[in-house]
Image 1 (cartoon, rainbow, N blue to C red):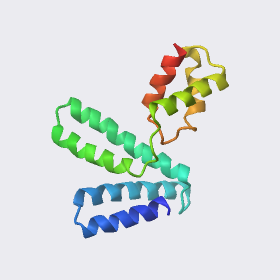
Image 2: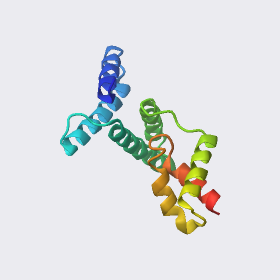
Image 3: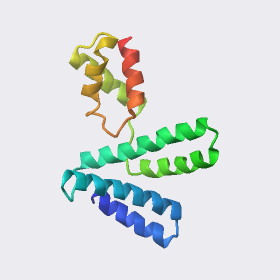
Image 4: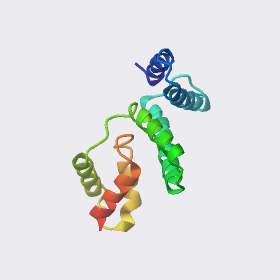
Length: 148
């Protein structure tokens, strides 16, 4: 089942159950996926492209959450937490710290990185391997620890 099919099914369920917030988020995600398809000139996106769009939507909401939280806007930040939780249900299972650490160490060895100056080389190699399965900031932090 493609992501759009899954979103359509979830949208129908949300409509039947009169879940306005859930329906709104599903529609936003579906719209983002469709817009990406139009931009690329296709009706079907690959799984990787769908993951990219979902990751972008998730990152936008996490950034907004941090901004609203620091501004003391709990009403808006609470709403964003719900949206984040819903979008995460469509994301693949996140890597554990141990799994991520293994990938980071392997990538550092593959790229022969030895210092912080090699950070870009390591990050560009590691990101395709963990696409959608780990947060970039988390990866960045772990790579820095191993290169220090």
